[in-house]
Image 1: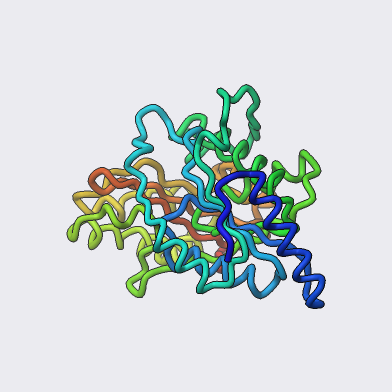
Image 2: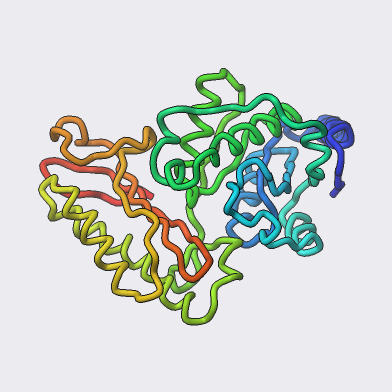
Length: 303
């Protein structure tokens, strides 16, 4: 495994890895797993998928300052370089791209990528400018690495929708591979931010996955009254005194469009995203579940 801290080194190392793969008769398909580091088993699942499908595997680790808002503490984001390298090596990474902020943004950036529509609700509404920063840095990473495939976890389902829309609109030749959410044994979705949860906060945070499990039954019985389901979701989360709801919502996926009030023919057979963002203390957690809406009522779990 090689570690590149500059864009020039990364491009050279990736070219070397492709050459070795070609000489050894292996696939030169290149897979990229973009991360902000502090890797956990959710990230490992992306790396394993890339290892199965790609002959050359690249991991990027970059805490991107332009996707953090003015009230969000960039310096507080957890880091563990040695642990990240160990997990990467265990999961077959060929090249780790670990650039500094100065390497990625040597001058104040004058160009940004903004994806309209899918960014206007959920995290896009509560974190203005966040997805502009995400789309911009991902487009830079795609230009640097030139991957054939890129792997993203569905815990950030809206982010996946944003990136898919971006590559479609801009004709970027990268296949986006969405990967299932990885959870702890008790249901908590894996997140680098979980390290900030106190004991009682973590216990109460289990209400998120529990709410999403219950949502399947509520949808099956709702007869198209999605607003009532949304209220049940919010009410269940509020049973935990430490839960401070940012949003609870139901959106058609992947266009992130509200389902409320739509005629049945517009939602039947569509995918529905049940999405949550809730703070426990100072830690903001997100979680979601995808459903396929049936007819004349009901929902079949899709992811």
